[in-house]
Image (cartoon, rainbow, N blue to C red):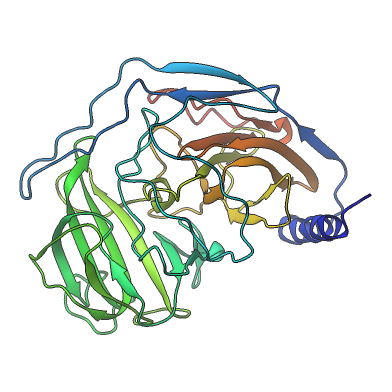
Length: 379
């Protein structure tokens, strides 16, 4: 017997996809891909924290020369065990509920870097605002260089990693004290570890109160302020950013925080590269992610242009984190045609897909860094 709730949410999803994708046309056909096997790449050893004394040059991450390729048959993939609990919790009725985090750093594969902890206490109900993920467009085509976490004013904000406070108060955007700065009150931390030769920074914006001073050293989990609604904000929330200083001349190169924040135990992350048929990245493409069992679903749009940077390995333009481990279906409406792809989310790992217009999906891992990720566009 058909589950009425499942049928209802499926119908709703299809309507939403059609509205976002092409309101004037009707979906023509449905193409479904089901992988016969899943490839998971695991490094021989986890990637350790890259400790860098404050004020000195960061040390590059170690290069792991060998990778282990595991061919895992579906429908019951069994990746290599990890040295802590990775059991997957069931989908929770409260979307703001989060289980305890894995310890940091977590890097079960060569190219992952979950170096930072969630900037809120574990008992705080919080969730990522789907309309304000990294790379989204808002406020007259301003591109979002971080992610927003929905929380009420006055929620304690914690340092996501150890380091030195380099900015406290107003002035991140303008470079000087300015109560009208769009970021509002900010704490910015230069961390005591780097990645691949670059210093790492985190930004905590729209704060109601700042509890640390410039040049103060803080530990991971230490209180740095209270959430608020200062600056140019659509409502109370924490705006959180990851920045890299790749040249030694500034901290303006942003990254998607959902690839850097350690996931909750039993949960994983989905990264995708959404392209047109010619192989060019598509901006603002709506993507729906829904479990094969259950009615909860997630949505995200591919990155817009701006101060947006993809991971050197994944070369993604879309990330959805905080997914309980299990089987999911990805849904994309491209040029009035609905494409779907089943994928496995593993605890503590990044799962990857690419979509290339009328050619559909693939779940093969990305090419190694240095390969050509942007083939010429077909006429």
